[in-house]
Image (cartoon, rainbow, N blue to C red; front, side):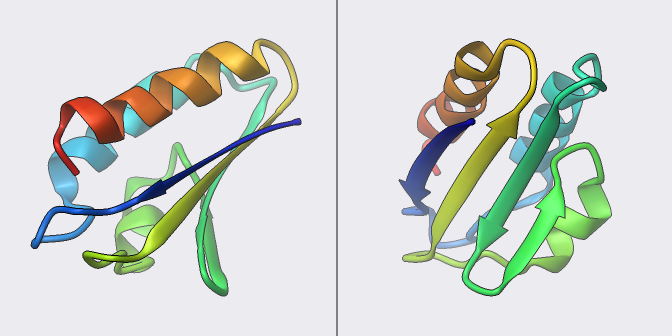
Amino acid sequence: MERREYTIQDAVGLHARPVSLIARIAMPYKNSKITLSCGEKSADAIHMLAVMDMQVKQGDTIVVTVEGGQEILIADTILNVFIYQNL
């Protein structure tokens, strides 16, 4: 299991564009369990609406957890979405 944490800096919080990118990244890895969590809420990364429903705001820490094949690659790729989207 790989785990990455990132604190959202963007004033808008976690919005549709990066959530869409994360879902597209996660989709090919159906043999892996990719979960995003924030506080008490969590969602499967391929389900955009579930991730958006988490309502991650500026200052919240989001945790990416990957179980299954290519854990390091997937976790690092999703973390890079947060970094390169200036979240």
